Every structure is written in structure tokens, then in C-alpha cells.
Image (cartoon, rainbow, N blue to C red; front, side):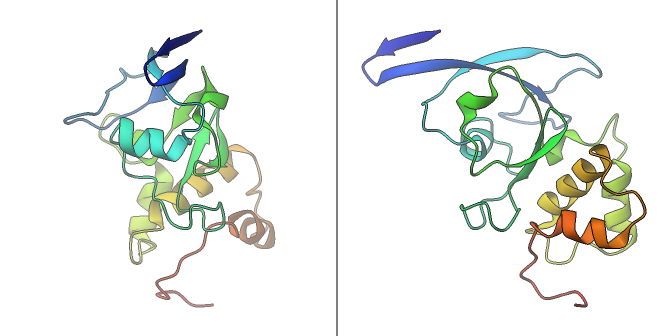
Length: 166
């Protein structure tokens, strides 16, 4: 459905968002529900800007804005995507999970907890994308005990702080 107004044609996009964050400008989805809300967005708006600017979910970071660093990684229907390259209108009705939506009932996702326990947080800027990518590759069954496959699957997430061993 499209509505024409003084700003031009604005398609309606309904995005199911799983969130656990609370606070001003953030939506809280009740546990297990698949609530939908509609947003009117420009056909040129990327998913990263929708999340950060319209929904005030700033966990996904704008790093390179070219899909090369992975700082903007989110899950769409359980699959990893670089949100800076994804047009929001392409995901009408999709289940979107950001770093803010991983914890459940105040308990961190096991990957989030592992990053803390193993001091994987490093500088912090790339961490949400790293965590989302790790959660996605586990869900995609790409982390089947083969360290080389895991390295390859995580290679799209770049840390620039230099606080790690080669």
C-alpha cells in the first residue's frame, strides 16, 4: 500500500521487531509475541538508518556504510545481513532481531555472555555486529566445531581496534 503526500510516494512497511530494550523511543515486544507495527518509509531508506534514526535502536553501528566491516550486522528471519546495504522496504513483514533484542527476561544471550566472559568486547564499536554474526552463524548451522569454517563465516566482521591476536 502506498500513500502519496507532499513528500512523494511513501510505501507502508510492516516490520516485526523482537526487542527487549526499554526506554524513550524504543518498543518492547512481549515475550514470544509476534506483534507488528507499521512504518512509512522512503523506498531509498536502508535498514540501518531505519533502526538507528527512526526506531532509535543504536546497537547496529554505521562503520563503513559499504557492507565491508560487519558493524551493522542484524538478523532478518534468523539470517545475517549487513543492514547498511539492505533497503528497508525489502523486508516488509520480516522478523528483525538487533543486538537489543537478544537478551530475554533480563538474561543475556549465551553468545553475549561468552563475549563478556572471554573479554571479547575489545573496543566495543564492532562488538554488536560480531555478536549478531556469531548468533546468526550458529542459527545457520555453520559453527559445527570446525574452527576454519567459523573464521571464514566471521570474516565479514572486522575489528579495527587492534586489541586481539592475529
